[in-house]
Length: 572
Picture 1 (cartoon, rainbow, N blue to C red):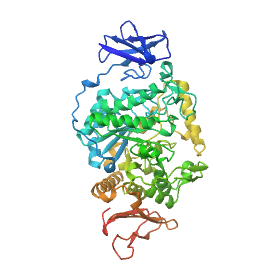
Picture 2: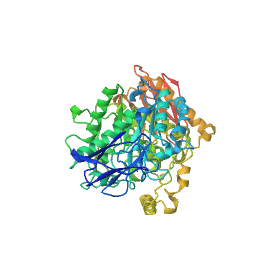
Picture 3: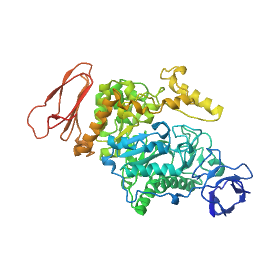
Picture 4: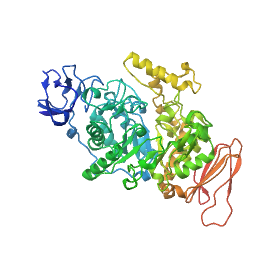
């Protein structure tokens, strides 16, 4: 027997339709809820009939075996046998995060096939695996940010048990797992929530579809829906944390913001289970209130992505100045990012044509993720080119060194560690021709301002676009990929071995640079880094070691070269 519960204040009648059986009327109870107990077991497929219409998926569906428009399937989470008793995730302060997309990480593109590559991550020195969104979305392949059944793992990746096996296998190897979740919008097709209840609002005009109703009439249950979703991933799937997509697109004027509520509820789950969890938002607001304590008026989230550091690093290494990169480009910007995380912390942004951001004073570098690449910064390019295609081998090594020697929590995107030649292109698989055409047109229009011709923009709906984005693991032992992999392994070993590199104190980062000669040196404790970004060989002065009275040592570097020293001895 199973008791079905549904929040649906909008319809006048609700029935539960069980596959192969006669539908059963549900009883309305207080608060817009409906309930009924029926002879249904795990594995049973069902849907809800609203006011005599066709069966619709459960808003809290645990699995959609036939996709976004099909019936839902009951799942009993208690039936899975976990082997990770006593597991605790490593702290973020010592983390190396590896972002991956299930569909392109392996040829098979499934939860179980990802397990086959976990030993590679362990050997690399990764501590945390971050999965791009895995909830049910339209079609077979997608980045995952168009999810509509937020409680259901995508059926093309495998079953709910397959996802649990992946998390369990990660824990068995000492790898924590973070899940990317999207609480700012839902996908454009298969989104039936509005037929059930006031999940959306027209008071705001977000970039992606209708805004979620976090602060209007009926919003208590809407907030409950998303909080319960987060708690489910942590409790029932044993994830160690959540990455919160684009929280600047979460509109909430409540006295207690949704993000603050979410953090408080996750803290209560920590106490209940005796496990540590992290919440890592993405935001383009440069607002440290996301991270500051509740006593300081903040939301007390654990860390956030640092796009300013990425933009400053990328623009220095590639010379690109288009779009948002127009706000960056100088070594002074890169130095500012290394010292303060935000380059724009209350100063005028020419790209935005306004003052942007707020100071991070008092916050540790552990509260920010630093990266040379991520899914957005690669996939939002028209052709999805990785850094390995945009810069020389020497500059690629410089970028990796600055990320892994930074005071931030380093993050690597899948394949970055060997300079993967495969792109990561934006891809979708919408089944509706009109929607597919709109996505194609929108993609071309998006890049017209950057000078891309429509015929040069890969069709996001083409199967080839998805297939081209899959990693080619066979190149890992070939030149120059093997050399790049060895460099990443060396840098990660050094970071793990040297406490000076993981202390997170941005105020102790010492940097010198010369904009004209194009060199930069960095010192963190006993570790000193020197890089020559010039096209000519030149002498670069290392910052003097603490406690010495000698003048700065000079190191002669070829073009596009980086060296790392400890107590005068070259270590990388």
